[in-house]
Each structure stands twice: as structure tokens, then as C-alpha cells.
Length: 258
Image 1: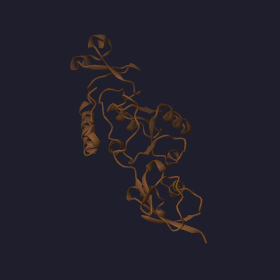
Image 2: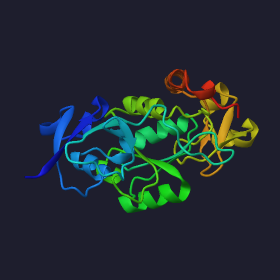
Image 3: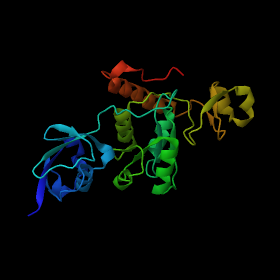
Image 4: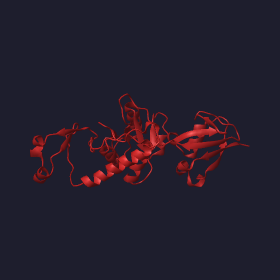
């Protein structure tokens, strides 16, 4: 007779289980050699989404091997989730998969270093994420199961607004709004109006005096017709990050001083 273990999955992780097994406690056959990480992923939960795991109340690593009859508890990653940063780096760098283009533009609006390609395959995404120490954001559970990936996260929500809220709640990154090109992720630099007047429409020239230019692709930026809508996105993001950081160590500022 096959041995079993009982796996108790936190409510926040039930979405990853197949509908037929979407219950808080599952009885799982165990062969006596599989690691706890393998057991959890066999249920459908990617390990990058898993936080603390315990066996009989004691914290264990994914490499642990439970015994027959054990009860395992699986919790989600804590929020805000810490990401290893390099010296002088204020916020994580991100890489988004091909399905998250709108989210990428919103993140760049907030000043987050966000790489995005609409034609990159999974192995290439993992290579870039590892080489540049970027957090890979995706809704592809299989991509998160790739062992070579150094840091990944599943993005919850089908609408860009919901996806951005999930990202900000999970990582609470320091924001630097209006500092990156939403098209290519380059850093914006101030540009004198006189330098670019001949590139502007007459109406734009009359209405605006403050401009920026992407240091990489040359795209010009100013607070135009969509300024109010974008301001609302920025203001809500700053408020949300501040709320997420409340009570965390140091309660660091939500916005970079530059």
C-alpha cells in the first residue's frame, strides 16, 4: 500500500491547484524518496510562490523528505517580499514575459527598470533574468518551475490595473515616477525646449514648457492630453507602496529622492 502525507495549502495558493484538488488539505501519495519541493510542485504550486513550509510544525527546506503520515503546511511568500539588491540599487529590476506588455509600460511610468520583449522564448527569458539579476514576472506557471531561474513571481489578475496592484503589494519597490521611457525603458533626461522646438507641433509648443527625452531611443515626453490619467496611476501607486511598507523594517520611503 502506498504511503501518504497530508499537505495543507494556504488559501492564497489554492488558485494553483487543479479544480478537482482545490481544497485546503490534500492527501498525497508519497514514494519515500521525493523531496517536499517536488511534492508541492506536483500539486501545481510553483516553488517561487511558496514561502514558509513546515512538517509537524517545524520549518523545513524544499529539499526535506517528509515521512509517511506527516502533515505539511505550505504558506505563500511574505509580502512585501525582499529581493536581493546590489550596492546602490534602490529597487529590484524586472523582466516581463510576452503577455504583460501593458503592465511593463505602467511599471516604466513609475520609474521601475522593466525589460520587456514581445518575441522572447522561455529559455531566453531565464537567461536574461539570471544574467541581469531581474525578477521574472509571468503568468506562465511552467516558466516559474524552471530550476535555473534565480527569482520569479506569478502575476495575479487579468487586467493591467489589477496586475500592477499585485506587483506593488508583493514587492513594494521604491518608485521614481516620470524617469523612464515607457517605450524602451531608457532613462529620461531633461531637454531644453529651444533644442526641440522644430520637432514639436504648434499646439504642443504653445501649451508645454517642460520636456524630457529618452537617452536611448530619443523619444520626447511632456505632460500631454493623458497627463491626468497617468497622474492618477502614479498617485495610486505611491499610496499603495506606502501602505504596503507600513510596519516593515525601517518603513522606507515609497518614492526615491533621486
